[in-house]
Image 1 (tube, rainbow, N blue to C red):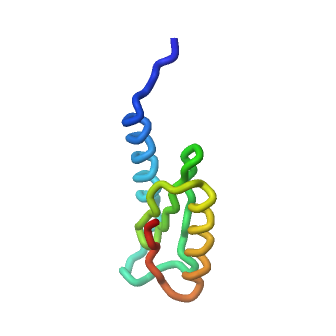
Image 2 (cartoon, rainbow, N blue to C red):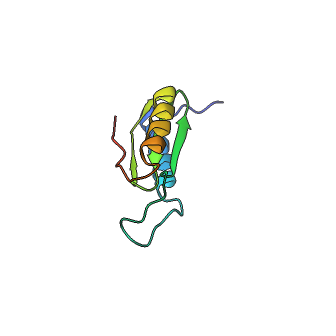
Length: 89
């Protein structure tokens, strides 16, 4: 017998996965001391994905997979020399 999970449970699992990505061990001592380029990760969740910047401590929210990948690449490019906060979609 296959157990069916309501949509809210799937969303809860995705939210927990996203929160875990934020808690990774990527800490800086000073508030302005960021890596350049920023450490950006794309967390794939089926056809959706979340772009997570560990330096900004922000994420894009759920996006189509390709949009999240493009956002991550763009954010890395923008932060090669200076810190720029990740913009949410």
